[in-house]
Length: 416
Image (tube, rainbow, N blue to C red; front, side):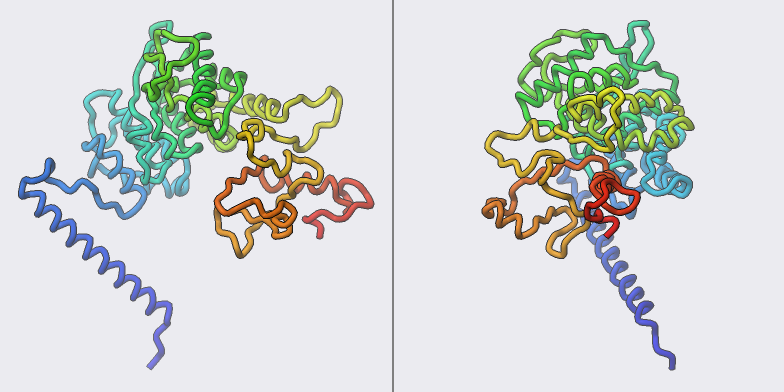
């Protein structure tokens, strides 16, 4: 008798184990539904829907705000789009959100609610359907009037948008704008006062409420506000009013709005490079070519980060120091090294056996030199610009290998 393949046996055991878990879950839900029928709860149905995969999680999450989408084929459409574009591709979020806005799956009370639900679907897909940002971070879509009378999109954000993360928060603007363009709405036309209000509000939030992870400059904020084709708006979240530029007709409150500050500063400004990296590949085919302003924004951002422009005629450096975080350092915290300082920390890629996926490891000799003052739980901010090839280029300029920087120097890490 032939021996059974241990892998096959294990897979059968795992399948049996999974089936037993599902059977117990079904039993628990049946009991909960039976209990709900007794009338002691406000609702007769169990609140938390079961979802077996990402597409079902997206539908289940957004159905809390738009119950009419449930069972109308959205999960199947998401899976079909994933086969076309790939899993977690931003284009899946764009396409399915547009189709929801066009009411291809079900009808809504109004076109505005359909478009709002479409945006929620897009954000839910981008955030894997596991956080509250599609429901609580993106609060509402408002249609406001331009100066010429046409309607534009005003996206109402609130503090929970931070749970989406910077990238998904930034791409939520792309999702909304894709729907705007496809549905024939006009672009936002900010006034000079509205542009200045946005900058003032971000600075007030950073100085008076809490530090932003990325605090953009006036020039960065002005440029983004003038070019983003939808208005980043939100309900008031703080008791403090902005210090200037109040009582504007198209901004409904004088109080600081955390959602506006988070989406502008920590989302689109901080993640502009990542967003442009994708849009530059396929943006034109999705009628998003007008987002090419991000390319110019990155030039402005890099110039501001490096603190000074390259001298005319001088050879452009491959990398330059970034002072964005260290300038906001809390007084009293020790500075181990300044950005790209000679004799400062060198970055070695990879992970030690003693550190996890989200950990930073420090050589024991460093601990000795520093008198062991870095304790477990102490926050370390290390400034990385771009990614591995940038640091390799920095390394090669000091390398003595043929074809690299200065002769007579030791080989760089890539040549050893």
